[in-house]
Image 1: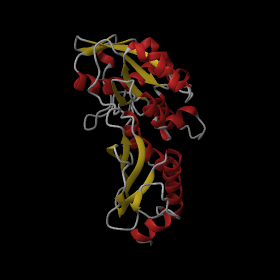
Image 2: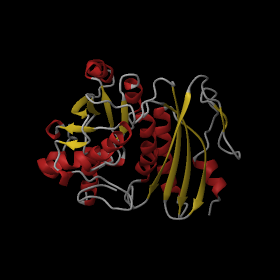
Image 3: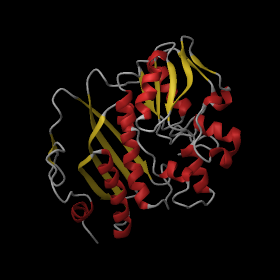
Length: 321
């Protein structure tokens, strides 16, 4: 049986220091000492991933590690922040080397790919759950929030939607092919960090799509005021989604399914071409799906289709956890 300190040293301590990381003191001391970039504001977010709620108990450990970090980094993307550091607390019932090797590989590989430095954390015994705190930096005038949307702004989304819900449905149906496009969207989502930085300064408001387009659009409307008109026929659907769920099921998954981790942004019509040009450099589409309105509420979508994921209330039929 390994101690928590053995596990931290073996799986989560960088082999060599990185002087460019801004970590003055990292894993192994009581606190981390960080050196933020002068003139930048810190963007901080925390998420908890619970086995059986946010990922299946038999999910590949590498995917669990990737996903736990990705969902937190997605919050930084929504603010247009550049990822810098993360902290991870891991609760697990058994210290199985094979599982920890896969988990740490998935977690640290995404750290490396996104320029995120693991600066500290904790390991304890208990039911499997992962808490991840991420910290990023953003110029004061460039931070995208939920409260800047204005009537007339276009509502647009990056990438494609519904893949998270479609991937969960595929997993529940017994699909285990690691290259299945819907499973990849569900188990190893890509946080749109580069897209967030590219859209900063153009978008008036932004949020990441974690609980479904409608639910997360509701957060923007709550903070910005007014309402929105959506055009569901314009929704960009994930590869293989219609084949898996049918046309109606695919559009419902795109509206309410959640776990997509694309960006939902509001921006003036005159900024659309520039926004698309910037994202084209990232080979990422930006699709207009509606417009903000002065009148409150959401039009264009039947009321029966407007329920997204909410903790303590449960998921809608076909929704994700």
